[in-house]
Length: 166
Length: 166
DNA sequence: AACAAAAAAGTTATGATATAACATTTCTTA
DNA sequence: TAAGAAATGTTATATCATAACTTTTTTGTT
Ligand SMILES: [Zn+2]
Ligand SMILES: [Zn+2]
Ligand SMILES: [Zn+2]
Ligand SMILES: [Zn+2]
Image (cartoon, rainbow over all chains, first blue to last red; front, side, top):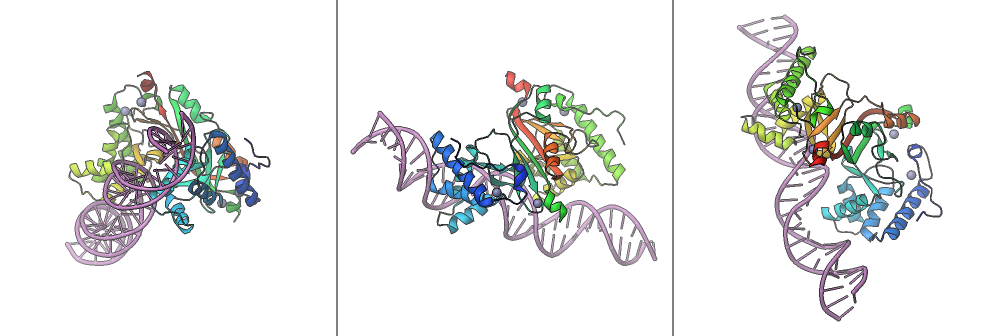
């Protein structure tokens, strides 16, 4: 289930120079293994969308994805992109960034499912930190009033260390 | 600056029965005083939008606001609603809920500005908890990698205590 | 009061994001 | 190989948001 040469990139690494070829390749391998393990079909259009998102740590809007799909020879109607994205999000291979109405590939598809995101307003890269559901401050407040959390959105916008320096 | 009879509603109270007339009236008073103190103009359309949002603890989309404005005799072009909402959000009288593309009135306009929200998927009420910027788990992780947070989105969807019971 | 500058509101048009609905094809498996 | 399920193709439309320019109102100054 875990790729042999899996090199999970951590949030610390996204904003610093790293071997992104290896980073993307290992995430794609992880996606293939996860789908195999769960009996899911990573069809050509789904894999292509994931590959597009894995090209960088920037978020892409659905229509940006659609454009690139069309260039690659796929159909170019909105449902083509949205269906593939829906599949990838549903199975945790991609995350939706609410603040941007856009999508990023998940670095660690096999990990727990309540990530938080840091969005750099300058270089537009998005780092994901693993986090568990209802683990932090919000979870505590929710428990205090008997609120049952089903899903969370936790996003911070700001400047990464490199962009502050520049 | 603080209304005489200010009754700040807390996140604990939103989901339980409370004197909402007083709750809304006190928030409106607080808004008037905040605007007076800062030299801001709470024009008729802005006040009406705030009043509409204060009618309940549910979030309203911009076009829902627009509809109600039109019924009240205001113009009905999108910028009418968006401008009023932009003003109210800019000055912390209203918050945007990213997950819903919708807006809720702020209960405590004078408090600090990095609230977290709990959204009940059944009764559609939204509770706000005060929270400070970068105070919790996310803030800690950001500091660890030198990420400078400018704004945050923290939203939890789930079921409030009352809706779990039913 | 008259004027100029700034803020707000009016208006038209369009851009950007997302989904409904139904037809067709492909895959799975019994 | 036939039936059902899953995925894709296609058309159309719903929903959310802003650009750009005009006119009116407010505010501060002469
Ligand atoms: Zn990388
Ligand atoms: Zn950056
Ligand atoms: Zn109330
Ligand atoms: Zn509820």
